[in-house]
Amino acid sequence: MQTSSNGLICGVVEGFYGRPWNARQRHQLFGWLRSGRMNTYVYAPKADLKHRNRWREPYDEVECAELGALVRDCHQHGLRFVFGLSPGLDICFSSQPDFQALVDKLGQLIGLGCRDFALLFDDIPSDLPRSDVAAFGSLAEAHCDLANRVAQSLRAQLADPLILFCPTPYCGRMAILNPDYLPEVGRLLDSRIQVFWTGPEIVSGTIPSGSIEAVSAKIGRKPVLWDNLHANDYDLRRLNLGPYSGRPLDLRGAVSGILLNPNCQFESNFVPVHTFSDYLNAEAEYDPRAAFRRAVTGWLPQFASDGASPVTEQDLEFMGDVFYLPYGFGDRARDFLALFRELCREVPEPGKGAEALRRLAAECSALMGLFEKMCDIRNRDLLHALYPLLWELKEEAALIRACAAWLASDRAGGVGFQSQEHLPHTYRGGFVAELQRLLPMDSAGFFGDHTR
Ligand code: GDL
Image (tube, rainbow, N blue to C red):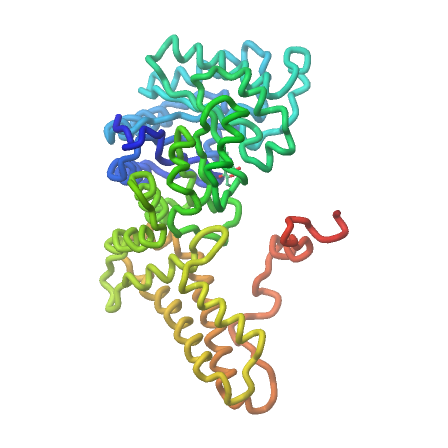
């Protein structure tokens, strides 16, 4: 297995909610990881029923063939394949049959060539199951006891397996609400088991190195970051195409690993994975924007098309700026928003603001053009990974461009602006949108005054 230059466990955890990636996509990922000098892939797709909801059930013959091929493909790329199991929704920690089911399940994977494992207790009830109250004093104690027994069983079968553990409070915010859990992990969990951590938040915009010291002190070891910076499963209108950022280089010395849990749409992860590799391999400095530009250049060949007007590097950079990172947009998207915001704040008098309106219309045209060019690319999987978001973007761009044209006109007749294509009661609608309108979240995360 290849070791990263700094000895970190590093790579990707496929740990999101939604459709798991397929063998072809994972094969491509392994190539990216290998060329980026990373060393680990963690298999933990929440929607593999036998990984989580029905964890006790063994994989059938077809699934075994697929998983076995995946493990081999991963190993052939010089990477560690970690199989994650997430039994916490309904396991009884004191039950011997449940322990046996777990060991049997991991044994099935050992039979398929897997040598490294993760036990994941994220996103499960934070109370000890009633059936375990007599046996354990706390949830942390039950989790550690199980993990230690699993580790013992794995070590009896394998030479020096990597064993990872995801605690139930796995970020700073959660640890505050559940202050006893992590110190118990520090005391009770076998010291050779690695512990996952997502940073101050589930999706951490920044992870200061100092924030790691506190958690390391509690858990008695350096954590492995499960980094959700580019994850988008929690909001399907997002895509995070921006560079790995908000993590200082000295963070690499404060943790024992970093694994990226990225966008659900596999093909959209080229820039996240490649900039992450730049960060991992950087010697003295890492400039996220420069890494972003380099990655965009590397991504461009995948947009080859037979169309008259192919996608350009500028197009990709603009798309990346629009779908950037969870807590900020890229340069050109920020400028676009600032211009539009200003025009909304102070709508120009008829005959005024021509230059600003022209600039706005030009940016809208660029976004609409981007969509048209994308439709011609040969890599249809890549197109469809981006399509729903690009469609919505070009629809808004068309609306804003029409509005800009109306504002630039003499606005004869005195009626307001209306679009023929955006029908009232169908636009920005649907059941979920209705619920979201009824429950707006304020900037502190509270849902309307009445619920405080
Ligand atoms: C989570 C889940 C993860 C999900 C991510 C982003 C962890 C440890 N667990 O809480 O499966 O993809 O948030 O929504 O991060």
